[in-house]
Image 1 (cartoon, rainbow, N blue to C red):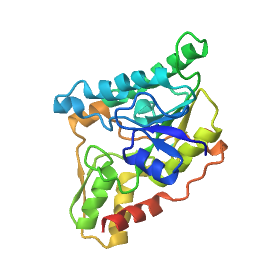
Image 2 (image 1 turned 135 degrees about the vertical axis):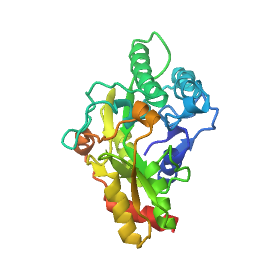
Image 3 (image 1 turned 180 degrees about the vertical axis):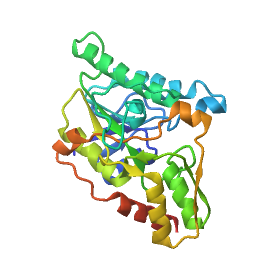
Image 4 (image 1 turned 120 degrees about the horizontal axis):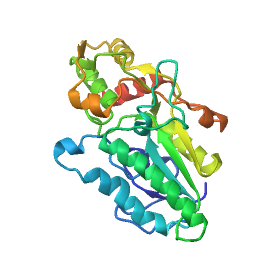
Length: 281
């Protein structure tokens, strides 16, 4: 792979840099990338900053810094977005969210990520005319729920891994009422998919990165309990009021575009669970 500047070395970014050493990991405050092509992963990670009294965090992180960087990009711009932006696309066990679906997010994180997508699309179209400096092309990659021994997993970020930690410790695991199905993909597979999209996905397009399957949270937790012989039990609890506002109970992604590029996950969701609980033991 040719060198690419990586802005944002969190959970996914750090794994990507480890998997692809040609990546140039830029300093945290970088606004002038050292490589023409850029992979932008810098972002907040959940919808809870307003509850913590910080109404600017999502705006500053997801929008303000992005717009400081864009004019200084001279090649292509790849942006990591999130399934959160299309979480109200009306998914069901038989209907995944497609790239063309109308997005109506409700949380601050989700809204600013969608706004970032729109700003990138508009800015790149303007740059293509020569009216402003910056990238004339982009790729927007919307990620599913990414799992894989996330060191920052908790109730608000990567909740499945937080629950798996309880299984390993033999504690009761609270699961929200309802079906609660999601699309999970191991971070190693996610990094492979990102690299493939940078190399082969069409420019000026959105691509969904995920397994393209719906998995029920309680089924995954039940599997982990049986697999580890844990004394944990599943407790069904009501969905909190704020969660009802900013989240959806059920969601998965249509990954047809990704599969057409030749992508296939190396890990099943069950193998991903095995890897996580082994790392937590």
